[in-house]
Length: 96
Image (cartoon, rainbow, N blue to C red; front, side, top):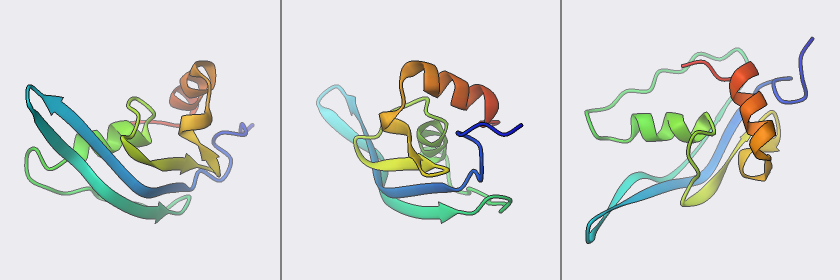
């Protein structure tokens, strides 16, 4: 039986960014990315080493929080989920 979290599992990112501090430098791993993925759609994420692929996947999986922008799955903003809801989301919806 589908839960509220994985029902229709569309993924939407809006103006998604993730920056990391490295000493005095700021690394922009994901820079203002927006996209929508429909349920059942297959997507390939390609890029060179260090281009932000893993950072983007961690944001979609709820393993990291964006510096700016938002990620929503099935209409639910991951930033608004409690720790328990995020754990349930990762357990029942995310696979990577």
